[in-house]
Structure formats: structure tokens, C-alpha cells
Image (cartoon, rainbow, N blue to C red; front, side, top):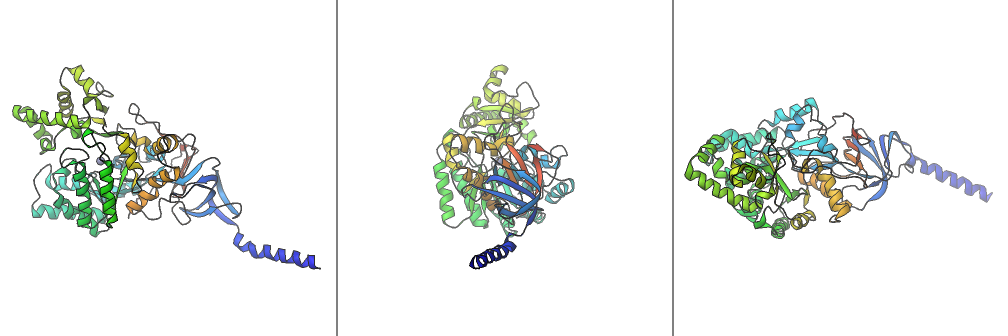
Length: 517
Ligand SMILES: [Zn+2]
């Protein structure tokens, strides 16, 4: 009798428990993987259930009685949030039929890219975003309104200060860009014509972005010792954020060139001090010792570019001005580490592709700076400029306010390799970062910096941007010689719940969306 009562009690208990264990149906179940959720928390075993474009289940699928239309076996794999890249040059790729899938990034596990950085991109943000919405894009994308483009549209290549009317026109363009969906304003204060704007002008424009909830993203005025110096430029960026009242994002943070090697400590201290005062200041970084730019941007003094290419040509033709130009270019080449550190990485001229500037100069029987000037006047070329020190890169990398960006550009392996390179090189080989740290800085931290809601972490209710990769094989394959080799190791990449990379291959989906703050 008593045994019977116990049995009945046990049965009742089981019945009571069953509503909590009601069968749950999901569209996709990623089963048996190791979850690294993006928050920085330690990795753990678990399953991820997705319905529509959201994560609806995390935990033990068997215990939770989860059934799925499709189950992805993630045994031995890492399951993580899709990576978020705060600084790319994908605006062109996303707009073209052949490249709108954004495969260079999908194969790295990047599911969101930001573009129109460095003060660039179109003035008409509305038209840009409409194209993507109409034609489809493979990753999510967010954009800035670029200050250099705005200044160029109103003032051309003039290095003068704006008149009040010009200032009003520029403010109106920034406002229009923000209203059309930009997440903030970007600057490229190193580049002409953005560089012709003084700090006060930038603050006035940044206030317009601030009033509309935007952030300030900057390729700072000087990453080296060109003008106000690295430290001066960091201080300028912090001041702009403080006076315009908006978050500051310093893009591709670095100590560029021999004069500023070792200054990462001071830069980090300045940003930490601003953060301690309550200011929202962050940064992002790519994991390469070479930057990618053009011969002109790396060697020309900005005064020589005022007025545009024809003005430059006229200056180069006038002997006294040319002498001054060549002297300034010599100095710029020295600060970057000399002619042997400049590798021509993309150009129509196949006779110089893949060669360093010192070799090109020898081949032509001229000085390296003369060879550089010839290349610039012939239409310029992309260059990989080896100018960073590993110790500075690693010093920046371990800071909890520095996320991962690619700054991906033609001719540089970073466009195809940045995110897997962080894993292969800095987690699995050099042990600079733990896996949860590396994933955090490549996902949740970037989402937080950019103000992207419900992205960057794996949790129920979040958007299902999810990646599944093999820790044994995940790696960058792109090199300076072959910069467009797709990365290895991403087995599944889901964008808004759509399996876009499936079994390691792209299957044609265009599930990306335009994101706003
Ligand atoms: Zn830049």
C-alpha cells in the first residue's frame, strides 16, 4: 500500500514536471557544440535553437525536449555570435551584383560590417541604403555619413576654412545623412579634403550627429609624427567627443612609424583617463603590422594635394615647389620606415605590382621618392606599408575597450583574413587572448560601441547571427602576395537566422539587413 502511494506520488511529480518540459519546436537547432557567447564568459557545452530570425533556446536540447526542422551537428566546433566589423571599405562591394554577398567577410564569420569610414562614402545615404535593401546584401551593414565627402561636396579640395553659409550646407548634409539612417559621422582627418577641417569645424558637425543619436568615428589626424602627432590626434578625438557630446570610436588604432613606436602605453592611458571621467571613448584594431593605403596618402604632404590632382601636377612641374615636395616626401618615407617598407599591393601597372619601392626605384634608376612621385602622377597605387611594431599591436589588443576591425581594402590581406587571424595567431598560436576574449572583442564589444541592439551575443531573444567554426582549422589564408584568398574554418554562418554559409560553402542567401543605432 505504502509502496503504491510512493509510486503514485512519483508519477504525479513526473506529470507536474511535464508542462515545463513541453516539447519546443525550432527551425534550426545547432547541437553539440561549445558555446562562446560573446560576453567574455567561459566557453560551455550547449545547444542553440533558432526560430525565424531570433535565438529562442539555449541549453541542453534533449533535456528541453527541443525538436527542430533542421539540426546542425556542431560536435567539436565552436558556436559563437557572428563577428561585427566597425571599419570596412565594403560600400562598393555591397552595391555591386558580383560582390553584394560580401563573401570576403562571410567566410571570416563576420555577419555585420560598417562602412563609409575614414570620412568617405556617398553624400546620399538614403540612395545607398535603398540600393542594398532592393538588391539584397549577404551581411548586415551600417553606415556613417562621411565628413570628408560632405566637405568635398560643399568646398571641393579647398584647404580654406568654410564660410558661415558653407558651414550651414555641411551641417545640413550631415543631418540629412543621419535622418537617412547613418549611425554617426566618420572622419578621415589624415586624408584630404577631410584634413583641411580644423577641430572646431569637426566639433560643429559632430554636434549635428550627436543631436540625432549618432557616434563619432575617426581615422585620426595623425597616427604618426606627420602633423600634430599620435598623442595630439588622440587628444583631438577625445576633445571632439567631449565638446560635441557623443561617443568616440577611434578606428584602426595604431602607433605608425619609428617616431611613435612604444607610444601605445600613453595612448591607452589617455583613453582610460577619458573613460574614467565618464566619457564614452573606444577603439578598434586590425591584427597586421602593415597598414594599407596609397602611395600618395603615405608620402605626399597634404599641402601638395590642395586643389586636387591638377594642382599637384603643377606643383611637381615647378622646380622650387618640387624641391620642397620631394624633401617632405623624403621625411614621410623616413617616418614610415624607408622605401623597403612600402609594397605595391594593387595597381593597374603590372610592372610594379608586388614590388617594394626601393626595388622599383633601382629598376627605374631614380630615387625612391622620385619613383613614388612618378607612380602617384601616373594615377597612384595601393600600398602595404609595414610600419607597426608587434609590441604595440599586442598592447592595444588586450585592452577591454578595443574591438576588432578589418579596415579591409584592396591589396591587403586584412580584408579577407582579419577575424580568423585573431583566432589563429593571437588565440591559438601566441596566446595573447583567450578564446572568449577574442570572440568578445570581435562581437559584443563592437555591438556595444556601435549601439547595435540585440546583436553580438548568443542569448535567447537576440538576433540569430551565429557562426560555427572548427577550432582546428579556422585560419586566415590571405597574404600580401595573395590578398584575396578566402579564410578557412567557418562551417556555418547564419545571418538573421538564415544559413548563409552551409557546410563551409556559400549557398546564395542574401539575408543581411541595414542596421541602425
Ligand atoms: Zn582609415
